[in-house]
Length: 457
Image (cartoon, rainbow, N blue to C red):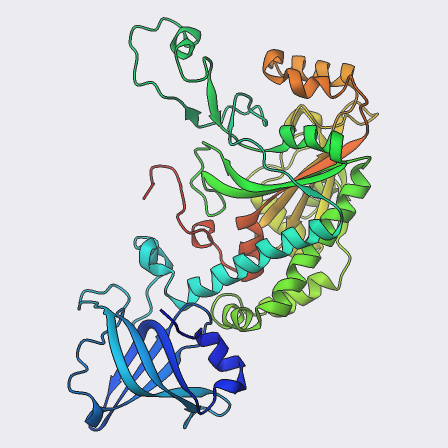
């Protein structure tokens, strides 16, 4: 049906004193002796549009309850009580969809935990309107960033036969039911759709490297799936993943691109989502805008893993997880480094090779790899990347050391035989960067339908 977006009524003066048609959902309804007031929202803005109803012109207003959807025809005028804003003097009201007294989103502020139980309706709240507007802006900015720099957008397979991370956390893809007659795994999968074991991709990296060896610079942007039994505020089983792969790039080049990208994204949100950021600054994280502005105006720190371990050991802080060289840096360690020591985002580089993936370039010391994680205050790791091992013999040895099935990676190994070059890449979890920019503390609150252990809706 023909109507005008509510955001346009607030932004474009040409609609003032004109008869207009708007549609939306009732967010508040107030009544007095002679007048009634509805506030509606159509999702195009955080601001609600007030509808002024002269009760003499309408027989019954009882149907226009919270959650109901309406079409309004009326005159757009300057707001009587809010300077610089507008409201509509209603001429006609059409009920498009009724809502009952059991509508879950009442006036009282619902907790985020409760709203997770009604994902089909939580998106109508101010919080989630703001979250998904920012998520949209971030997604657009990511594409814009790479397209401006001559990266080619590549769609890598979602169904795959290889586990990129080698951690065995893949969801299996099968057309077969339970088969108690199969004596071995190979026998079970022999008659399956692909004739072998398959799963949902945990990363598009390996396929992205194939494309980078032809196009030079590529990026992927799509879903990844990890069957990781981790029920934390930072983990979901299905998430959106941005993964650039860059030929002729070493670790310092990668770090420069990653920092530029993060700053580009934040600047895009600061420019295009001022109302949303003001909302988060007020209700979610005090000082959020100041934090974001500080990030885009500062140089990220680069810290060697060995130095980071030394700083943690000498901090005098009693950590729950012990700090030892050769162990991974835990969330509490990440928080201390970013929030207490450096007070800004940091790249931690040159991790022990034993705790990193097989494809990472081995450093000359024989103990570490040219890897980096970007840690940010409040969230921890949002980017993990590395220079990739371009040497055929070193890659083969790393895979053998980890007891990997070489046959699953024939295409990937072949890249090291035909014009191999230094190349690097990283992965950015979309939900992680949304959390950082909005201040939201739980990843379940920045994705439409969170998939977590024991919970699929």
